[in-house]
Length: 449
Image 1 (cartoon, rainbow, N blue to C red):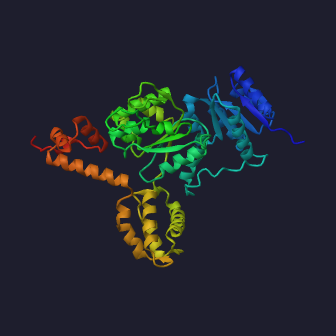
Image 2 (tube, rainbow, N blue to C red):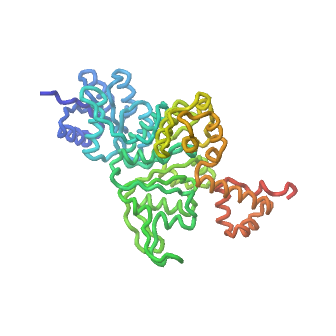
Image 3 (cartoon, helix red, strand yellow):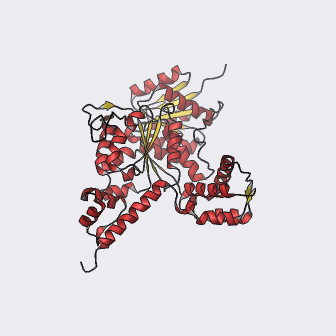
């Protein structure tokens, strides 16, 4: 008969330590308990556990300090940290140092068993648990990107809010989808909302819904996107572009876990996980008063930063091959590779539009290819064409809007009242537009004014 794996459980709360030990024992594990980090280290000298599970907050040596000591003496021994919901960010910091995983308290027995099984599979002894292909849409072999994916996989099992930072076109929505796929909410809807692409006067209705007669044109009840995603994940892209009035209402949704459609008298309970993304520096936006600090803290429980494509040079050949194969099939072309100077052009480009721009360039190249080997002239043409200049309809709309505002301010010499009148917008809305595009009216006034 195969020996049961031995787990060292550490918690300075006797009741919680007993509960944890009972749960592990029921699942078929041998358990040794310790009421402090110091006692755990002493027991490590006399037993050989397959896994350590420790509370984060303890008197004396805390969970992270215990992990550091364990790693020095037993570098291959996996450690799982138990943490309160408010300390998830500290647990994620511990992941970067090498902690195997964490669970937020209170946790379900099933989640505990899954994490323990995964740790024992990787830590030695048992056969590894087969990896679910949750991130297959993200093509990478880059160390920085792999580290981001490892963190994303860890936080996916929890319900903590995640904020993804990264430049436009770097794959923020793909990462959000991967987190959803790796989470217990995967069977439920994943709904993406671009906060910068929906007109401000329609955004509240789209997010939270409306009832018939709530405003002119509301001919019937409309189920909002939050309600449509109930049980699943809501991805709020470009959250930094959300108007201040909507920030207040979103904060209320996150606090109360209810939504109230426009014109409705009653709020409806809602169960969604929030993943948000932005290319802006929200910490700076918060300091400048353009983004609510309390909402920022609600959204930024776990922060994942995607590197630009220029920092993932080793991924460019992989992405080129992947996109070329996929698009050749789409267009019915036989494209087997690139001439050496054509590949040199692709590898040497700076890719300011990141992965999205690379995809657009490869699509144009494949669509226009007339031979199996793509020549450099075709790549040069694609790099200089619209695919390089315009990454998406959303970015084109944003660029047009910014240029339009600049022209208005130039014509009115920075007079906001006149500019708003010409644009047929009220001053408050116009100021919101200026803030969104980081434009200062004073920069357009005559120097003598």
